[in-house]
Image (cartoon, rainbow, N blue to C red):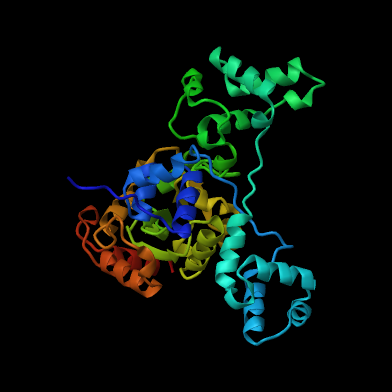
Length: 384
């Protein structure tokens, strides 16, 4: 009988898991990105009910790791506490407490002291439901009557207009239901909700989900001349995911099926749009007139892209990858080079250019066995 071992993720991997989850990715998609199995991803998310924990920040009043290293070097050099404090512009009492708290003069180590201080700084603030038994009983009673958390929150404000201590947001109720570590509301109350997903995506965690793109122009407003592929210069784009949160932007010209691959260091809209602008400026303006993308949040800054390149951007309908058929087909071909689970970050832009060149020199049946490179260069020659 084999024993299953729980996968241990690094802090960077855990952060990547939560980033993907906030962006609306599925468990299977996150697992492919991280290079593990979906149950391991579920274990990480379920500990917080699918609600992303707040990012911890170091207080500006606390000693930094660099300051602790200066303390360690000063002790090794035999300096007095007042001398070390003067160098760091800290009170001598602060330095004295720091050293006594972490092993004294003979055993003080900067890395160990910093890690211990970071762990000891955890002081979770109890939620409002945990501090008010009366409010907790009211909420539980309403949930048992199949009221939604939003209905409960609204009713409390209306029924107790002058008693703010009996007000609570619906997100707090959801968190208390899904994050059982709080020990506030019993898990059995989940069965009274109309929708009972195993993991919740809170409103704060879904502010950057797919589809939330300001001022986007629908593909339905794209000129008919683009649809029939007779006019060159109109492109389709998407991101290919690899392991360890690595990505490549793929661009395909609709008329010739000519492929361009762009290395991106992250999925953030700032990074992706900046790289796409640089790539667009490397091509003649006449052969890059529009770009059709899916509803990924990586193109939130599409207006910045258009202003920098004068290239119009259109967005597909939700869950309609067939509207970028050339790009989807090309992404499938690219999986020959980048199988799922591959760490794409190890490939340089020169490597991507070489792979794109191979694809562009491969005859295509849809082009009557002409190569995309030949068709694209013919278009450039005619336009120019």
